[in-house]
Image 1 (cartoon, rainbow, N blue to C red):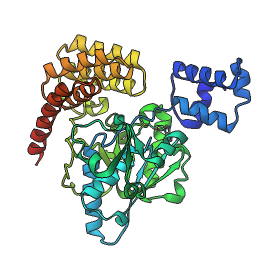
Image 2 (cartoon, rainbow, N blue to C red):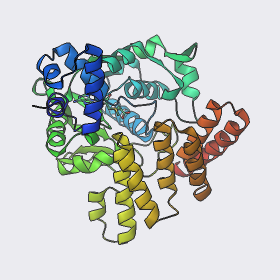
Image 3 (cartoon, rainbow, N blue to C red):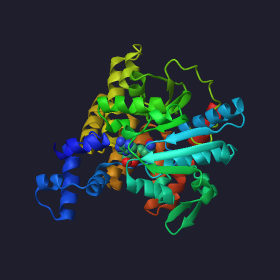
Image 4 (cartoon, rainbow, N blue to C red):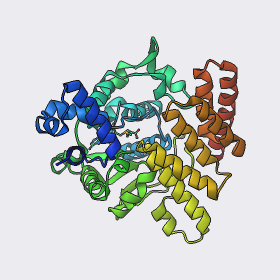
Length: 400
Ligand SMILES: C[S@@+](CC[C@H](N)C(=O)[O-])C[C@H]1O[C@@H](n2cnc3c(N)ncnc32)[C@H](O)[C@@H]1O
């Protein structure tokens, strides 16, 4: 078995040769081994864990796709109202550095839900990420929105970092675990709310199906599951039905009694509408073929970028621009890819083109504000921040 196959077997991750090669080279150098066959033969569990750390992508931030937290909070409130005194159980897997479960804890606290009314459990394959989550200490990178008032409420400044409050920290239980190896049978139906966002994008189809089977067992029959926008079609192919909650990417088990539409708590900027995924588009013949192709190209480019395949993502985005030169989302994505490659100048340029084409592109305005702040241009940062705030307020007003 080669390194790529081994890593896929133990983590489920469908990795590119390049990613595996880079990780292997780094660990072999660290261990002073020059022959990859010898390295793989002597691989101890600790060394395998170190290798895994180099291929996972523990990228997350507070209130990522914030619509999910508003919808989950409203759902929890509904459950508690229906059965006062019960405990609502929430699972976040993968939780990366804890940004997702802590966002849930903050949203519940903001909504006045008593800490004892919910149990939040969180797990991730990466030991390093779980240790970071337990420590609850974050850099500015974890705070990417414009509305950062929650940071004042729940974090205290420690030098360049932010420490989450002890009260919040005590509300989440973290563990290091592989979703694919969960003992789901003994926890069948345990969770009312499950977050599994931005993991299946790294799996191939059979692994995705296996992961969804585990999640389906863990989720109560009347529970609600939150996925990443690109992952919704995979859930729909595997026994789930999407719920029409804007910006939340929420699903429930197919055949479950439809959850009453929770009234959105809308504490944060409403997420932008997702680009239609390919399978959803199949069910919508009214969409013109060109629009469909552009949406598929954008979805593919986002998936590639999420996986760290920047060259392919750039190529897909340029193909999209060839078909639709005015695609603000394409320029936004090129900005994100440039930023991931530490090319802030190019990122700035792409995001400016994005907001030129779509002046109310909330995400681009936020990124431009953050970038200007990072380069010490407080005035420019303020201008972008204000524009983003206006967009946020306008959308929040419309969704009320
Ligand atoms: C991009 S992060 C997603 C974090 C968070 N859910 C979010 O959407 O912001 C992906 C995480 O999946 C974790 N991961 C990868 N394979 C896993 C597995 N088989 N079981 C549990 N976690 C896994 C990685 O360690 C990484 O932290």
